Amino acid sequence: MSTTHDNGAAGTLPCIAVAGASGFVGQALVHTLRARGHRVRALARRPLPTLHPDNVVLSSFAQFDKLAQALAPARVLLHLAARAHQTQPGADQNDALFAANLDVTQALLHAAQTTSVARVVLVSSIGVNGRRTPPNQPFTENDHPAPVEAYARSKLRCEQTVEAFCRHAGMAHVIVRPPLVHGPRAPGNFGRLLRAVSSGWPLPLGAVDNRRSLIGLDNLVDALALCAVHPAAAGHTYLVSDGQDASTRELVCWAAEALGTRTRLWPVPELWLRRLAVVVGREPTVASLCDSLQVSSERIRDQLNWQPPLTLRQGLAKAVEPLRPTR
Image 1 (cartoon, rainbow, N blue to C red):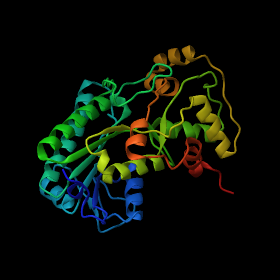
Image 2: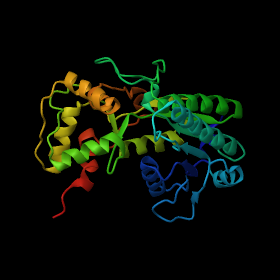
Image 3: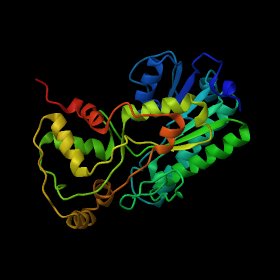
Image 4: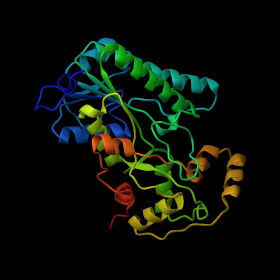
């Protein structure tokens, strides 16, 4: 596929469709792309916080005609739409999550095939690689996938579907696997951890000595914007991170420093934390705080000359900004 066909006419910015535009990453991505001069078709299943003529709300991505019409002006589709968590544990819920994510991906691909979309960028998950890494052995794109959770298994299947479909349809594809994303008002365990630090309550994490790769919201958005248009990105999978790994203990200390509050950490042995997690049914939460998970982002840095705009500590400072006490 030629560069001109992939990215639009020479000297112009391609119109980009963002599916999943109402999510934590999607909202930031739409804002950044529009600020950079792209026309952005923002597709979501609930209204976006700001009104714009190119925002499209769909009750379901199964609405083929409306979806194809929404994608019609776009040259690039950034696919972030996904169901991340089942509301209740169990095999049926896992199967429903798997099917929902695959159905959305297939619907987007079939609709895109009828339009001028020439590149599909899928936002996947580092969970596709596995749950944890051995010490000093970061994940790379060459590692064999080993997803554990239902969400990660669904993302691997979505990757395989995108790759096969785009190859058959003559479209370019790019896959991006981020680790945990931090930023202002981040959802999930990271947001809860920052709120706990902000509250000043003692945390039993003083003895945790793991290594974690993260990516700040601004850094992830910047990488996705680059993958949407860079000719050399086509056909590749990229792991992305802030480029600096840290322990959970360090993250707590740095967040407290950015908040201007005291760090209160109890040195509870990690084994005790894991045993308590089993008793109270919080194994995944404690694993996310204690396990090591490192990624190498050398490929995207080398091939696309990408550099994260913010350091990890700069990103953490932005992440805690909404939690700073008002004066």
